Image (cartoon, rainbow, N blue to C red; front, side, top):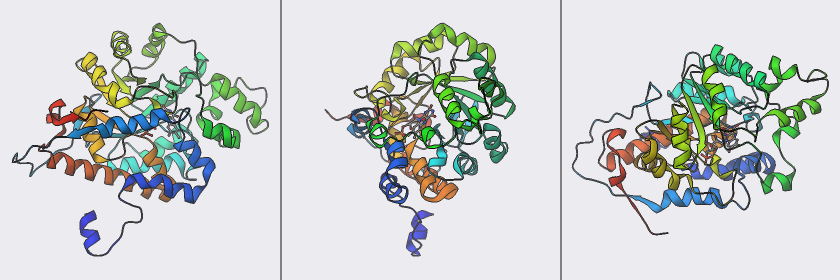
Length: 379
Ligand code: FNR
């Protein structure tokens, strides 16, 4: 479709090379918001390593394999998805666009891609759910210090039709992020609300005055509660007791942690380093993926994120052992540039390129992609 449009001279509103979106968004929105989204931990070495680890893997295509009819669908957490893709949880999307999470969620729903809603969203989860109708949605939990807040979030998410829980483990503390520090920019501190908290009865019960009367106190309360560096593996039992659907641990990089996740009765892991935003000098997510898949691929659903920018990245992640990938920054830029349509553009380009890469590599479906499809160039 995109090729045919091109032949009639209809130029897409946004570039089809998704790696250009960051620069365009920076020009449109300025350094504060884009610095926050693009920014990484420390000197950015992990974000660079994420890209390098994917680029170092090269596809070795096979020929004459009848790829005329293709089926991109995969089963993830007991659901049939049209393609091995979901939108990653990205907090406070109102810094990118006033329509924020509901626009991104509607785009995901329109393209049949699951949307993972961040705990730290600028829109209450109930409103996002309403925007999605009965489309597939998953809820990401920042595991609060306060059990009642966690219990309340889980109850609200279940009632709002979120089917799977993604528990983010790699953010017990906010990282050292020079771009935010230097620009003194953190969305919460610029009046961008985290509405899931500010509308939560268990959260607001801990405030001396209502949020609108003393927003600074509410922000401080949020920062204080939002995650808990004292948690350990046995604490997962609390989540297992309070959530009956699938639970996926996000931010697992070590194969031993993946084994502990399986032992704790979890359903999946996301091999992720938070897009390089937490630890500078961390292992690249794509380098961690095959070791985790090898350790638990037969016990858990293994998902992947951090650094996916192109259709061939999706292919490589599958070849390294992922069942599906999550996409972070590129869709946030799509949102910043053109709202819901921008997010749909990003999803469609990525999946079109993935479909072509799959076919040109000799595969008619994701299930047949494996380690034999890649070679690794020496670093
Ligand atoms: C994130 N990420 C994230 N993860 C999470 O579990 N909860 C959250 O609220 C957020 N918020 C967030 C904000 C911004 C601005 C970014 C860029 C990322 C991490 C996200 O889910 C995912 O792991 C990475 O974005 C994946 O890497 P790429 O695709 O951005 O390279």
